[in-house]
Image (cartoon, rainbow, N blue to C red; front, side, top):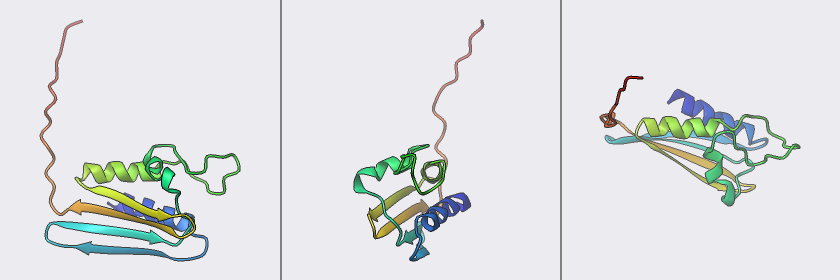
Length: 121
């Protein structure tokens, strides 16, 4: 969870030159939520799903202004998924982005159902 928060807050700071970054937590007996909101540059609606793909950046041009590998959000989605949760994003270009992570308080790892087959060479 620490890596998820570090990645989300790091991105929020990177893409918010002037403005605010807010981190909030909320919980109940069944789940807890982490909200990271910024008033940064925002993400075009047609690019939102792509931001979770490894090595993908919204601005892939050679003159892009923001550095990075494009792995942070892919790592977030994978880690949240492994913990039985979900991550969602809302964004508006020029107004900022809001990421919400929802995780169950208790999570049981599903039993591995794949079979292993061995053979002689």
